[in-house]
Image 1: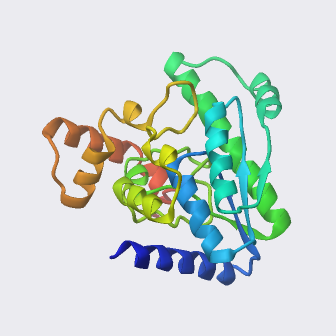
Image 2: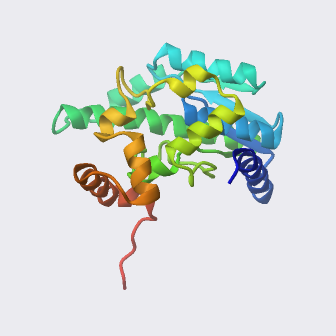
Image 3: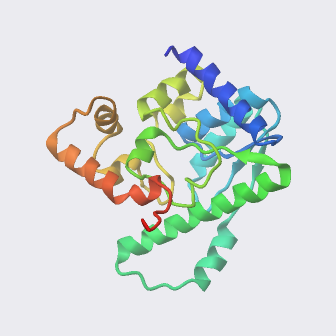
Length: 242
């Protein structure tokens, strides 16, 4: 599908889903990354001023907010900033702090940030009668690269059928700032964190596997293992067969 047709169809789909739900517009997180930027621009094209981008720093990297603001300014997107540092501190102080190891503790804290952001989106969406638009793409979703009931807790996923390379092409077509397109993809959950660093393979390798089934044996094994382990994230909760 030609890129301009894809962009038009996705914008129309967003507008259709908002109308079907009887809502007035859309709310979405603006993290300063490529996926959320594409979602923001598509939603703006779909719904005009009936959109709200929410910037939600939680001990976040300052540059990410700068990039989110650059997108909002370029495309005249309404924004609201909600700083969650205090909420994170209070809640984390009340929760148990006995992880089995350092990696488990870091993951728990990272996921807590993502779930607080989800609560924020829905609080605002409920007040405005907006839908929550997520930024997950096919590549991330395939291997479960999301926080359950965090960034995956949304109403619609416009990019859900697009691999990362397709999202990048769409970003170029839409005019997302080049600095956002070119920076290493990251969830911004801790300093130096990158998607590919956590994967152990590149998005190009993952995209190739999803589109053609082809990649080297070691990468294939890791991807297939991630798909199996994350099935609980990509399917409804299982019910007993009786």
